[in-house]
Image 1 (spheres, rainbow over the protein chains, first blue to last red):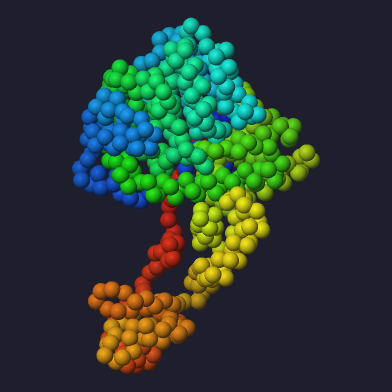
Image 2: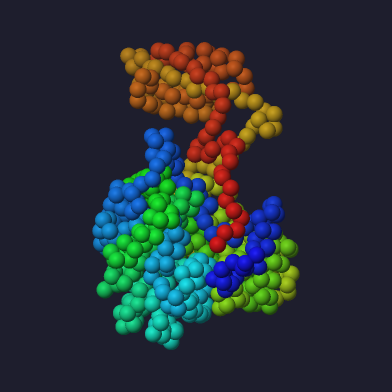
Length: 386
Length: 162
């Protein structure tokens, strides 16, 4: 047999998969390893999807996505973040941010182009860059700065091949958010070096005690930014696979070309459900965010009591505590915590080397489970004798 | 205000949430939370803490009935008087003055169908101002006080995803 594409070689075979499979097949585990809401989609949104199917909305839509949805997205972005995208040509509806990310890399990169990724990072960015023949260039960050990059951190990694910078705030896995000032400093750098910014803002609604800054709202950034967002996290719609990309006409038009020959369109039922989410979903979204906020505080306090240091995450639904005190590596910590206490967490090193010594704990689980998991982690730490 | 709302929402969901847990969730001290709860109890914002029990599981069967009551105002007692009188019976679980085709909506709980029938005949229908009653026996409960009580499948979220 001839070998499959060499392009697949640098993509890690994910030894972590085995560990995850074990978790999936073990009953009665409290899993803080989730990466999606524990709420189901609010019923009024689900009903819009059901109604769509019942009324015969079972076919393709415009490759761009329903104009009705694009107009609603445009209005929402203007209203919430003060950014202005034309529903005709500057917004593309995709099957989740994941698809948008993939096709964006394909239209943006030529072989050898470098894309800067901030670590710890969401796991899809680097593979998507590689699938598109690009080179991910990693900027490691530190817990002392809440895993946020400084302008200097980024600048030293810029070469004449650098084409784009990926930002994902609020962040998976760390829960970090970036203040407007910090983003403005990055925007200056982006201007200076003529870069594109891929801003994955899927967790934008899950920002606590503050307001989310949309990167393209910053001075001069709209032209350089490809804004990715969707409904998975804000409206508990991960399984609907519905998101969107906004950017300048040239890029969005090019993305549409790839999209029309590969995905054709996002599922029409999901598009209509998303319309309902934008029209009437504000309240159900706010309720979920309030609930996450309480759980966030509960978990941060619990981790502290368990003796794990953790900066205060202000976005998404993750905490990223340091487990260095345990004397164990992230992988061993996760494995032993699972074996001995039946609590599942995600080892931080899978999000990048600088994630070693940390674990990701999601608080998109019930308060009862959070309390129980924190008690077990505390026991685990006590039994380690540290 | 969010502090008060947060505490009330937490307690409405689970009245037994320990104070220290509430304190963590709302980012206040245990003392502040205790003081607030005490104040809310005194002001009767928090009326009472109750428990939802599935009596069937311990083999105690109850019969629930919704009773529509029409009131004849010419008897001079008025809605308030009749409602308060009915509310005093321990068999009565709830009393509401409602708009529409009848005036009071009353939920009664008894041990048997017969008990409900006798209760309506002897205690309610005999009130002068009660003009007419219609009794609906409850066959199956699906949701009570905002809590879904039937077994349901909430979909299969993966235990791990990135």
